[in-house]
Image (cartoon, rainbow, N blue to C red; front, side, top):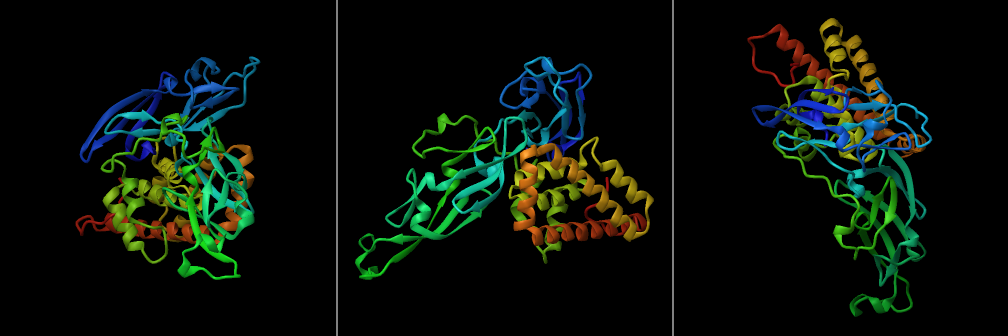
Length: 400
């Protein structure tokens, strides 16, 4: 996804045609085009990524592109106009070796869901729905998982009555549930049996193998179901030599003490300062919501046409005071992040995201924000040094 990261220029033509100049390999840029009307539909006055033909339901003159976000006013079934709706194309468009491709929703919660939380027996989170928005969802794990011979097993029930200490441990490819399970002595090898005592066994399971995204809601699917029965295919893996965010995500963790590593990784990925900011911001957002894919899709929109790239470059050119410049950039990026999140959150998801962030990751948010600003300040210093000493040594992370 995040097609804007490898796009030099793009625009909406004839209301539905997205035309872009995108990277094909390390040194080659080509033009590609895609008719969004063939991949996005309309349902009850909102965009629908599971169908097509939205433009025939749009109000004349209401369609436009702002950054990577497509806006339109669409007709409801009762023939009235719905409110302005939007969809962030960065979440669904990808650069496949110089060709723009639209990827449908994946039913995997590791790529299409975020903000996972365990409240007693309830798994909570945000799932991408058919409208391209994140929706609040929950599912009672006690109805679908049980304790079988001291192991967590799907397709059973009453797991939480037979164990304790349950914790979620999400990663890029898994959502593991860990816990201590009561174990009958006869289930243990003789060498580990203790007569008259309650035994406990540590065990974990990947919830993502059975909990799937069903139109923006968690749904349980028995693992015996054939992969071909999934409603949505998994997204195509982007090419590593064109998606620079893949390199950064694979090599760098956004944590204190590795600013040099971050700088080197970004230098290997991009020479654009605004794109570099987008990568850092995307990494920070991904850390907060628990989804690197969604985080990078939002972050890389910073450098998109119609985004805040001209504002950032104007601030850098016009403001010489480092403190004023840092505060101005912080405000500009903050406004962008607010708008970007507003465009991808459904009304029912906003309150949950705020509560989740405050309760779970408040310190991490502050740390990530400070790191982004620190790296931004270091990058701007190098940019100023390059302008003052044009014949000096080559510096990384320079403005285009």
